[in-house]
Amino acid sequence: MEEKMIRKQTREVRIGNRVIGGQNPILIQSMANTRTEDVKGTIAQIQKLTAAGCEIIRCAVPTMEAAEALADIKKGITIPLVADIHFDYRLAIAAMEHGADKIRINPGNIGSRERIQAVVDAAKERGIPIRVGVNSGSLEKELVEKYHGVTPEGLVESAMDKVHIIEGMGYDNLVISIKSSDVLMCVKAHTLISGQSDYPLHVGITESGTITSGNIKSAMGLAMILSQGIGDTIRVSLTGDPLEEIKSAKLILRTLGLRKGGIEVVSCPTCGRTQIDLIGLANQVEELVSDIDLDIKVAVMGCVVNGPGEAKEADIGIAGGVGEGLLIKHGEIYKKVKEEELLSALRHELLHWGE
Ligand code: SF4
Image (cartoon, rainbow, N blue to C red; front, side, top):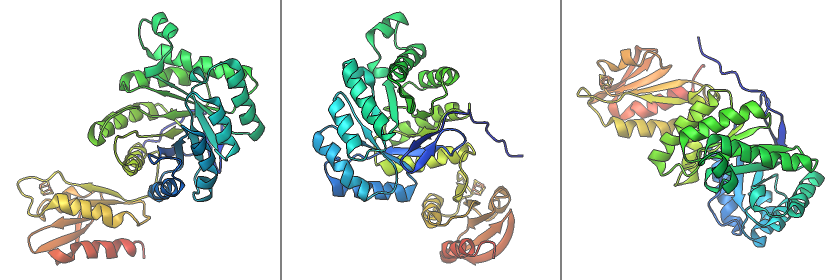
């Protein structure tokens, strides 16, 4: 029987046209890496990310021009837009005036109480949620001293302090994020904060690295956090094309059973019996199924002798041989086709699935 994860009940928070928290789906977030002032370029990237499965997008707002650009960017996109603000409270207010659906601030670097209050008042007026973010790299000195270093306890205290400041200003439309590039510290901090607060959590491992190391760190960290039922939105941070972040995030959610839909491609690890270019074939199959909306498993196997048996758990599969390949359904040979027709035969079956 399929294991079902029990998710922690958090408060619901509306971000533009989506709602997170509660039992709403865990949404995939990414961050545009275009210059926000470049409206055309930013819209083009967000549209591409949206088509790939991105559900919330964050843009850096380092200048007033970037804050003003949000209004035009919003006209060209369909997913909620989060403005990422550091230091300058005026940019946070301008971002909201120009249509940001959520703002991400660290009240610790916004400055005086009056400035934080001005941001909170602007958010309150428009019902815009504030994501309170803390990062292990910028933990306050007092907390580093109190806990003898950067610790999960210190990160949680820092985040909760900020939440309390904003709550004290009469606002509780909040999302919390705690980021650390140390996977185990990040996991422990999430476990702790989840026991102390019911605000939705945006989860991610920060500065996780290039595609390979970033994917591994993110997958491990997110899996440990999400499998505790914690997390309402996720981001896989990679030093690379943000499209890779979306692919990885989708895979992580699907692997944990937190997301249904989409074809899962499995492929054999290859061995001395492999008779074809299986690596190339598996990549071609991933590409070929990417636009087909079926909730099934497709296997790509490297030989016709053991391939069918080893693909038993897949709904459909192909096994490649020299000159001839097989179409397999639940481990049984279903059809023999010429090697060069294997991919088109598979696509044909998928397009007529269930007919
Ligand atoms: S399916 Fe064939 S090629 Fe692939 S690992 Fe198994 S025996 Fe080797």
